[in-house]
Length: 110
Image 1: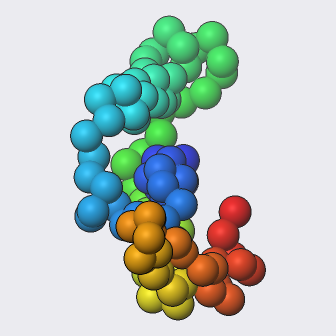
Image 2 (image 1 turned 180 degrees about the vertical axis):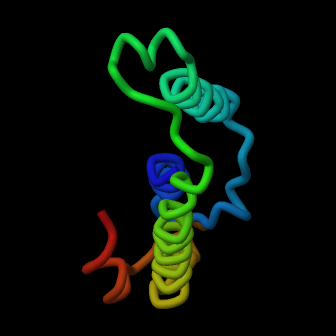
């Protein structure tokens, strides 16, 4: 669950997930594959016997959800602050958009 949140926040450095969208079919395939693989490893009896594990109760998946929500909200807030504090101007000659990095982008962008 935390890895999926990490994947979603690393999708772009600047744009929000709302404006970027979830149109990348390879990424969606990877998320689905990861979920299926985790469920297969956690609940498939022959794998459990081979590894000496047992099924994970559904309630044990829930502690990761608040951390995933925090990671997602923190990064969306960081991106929004970067967009609002960085100044964009258009060069009158070339019509090229030039962005001057704000303090938050200089110190919190990777």
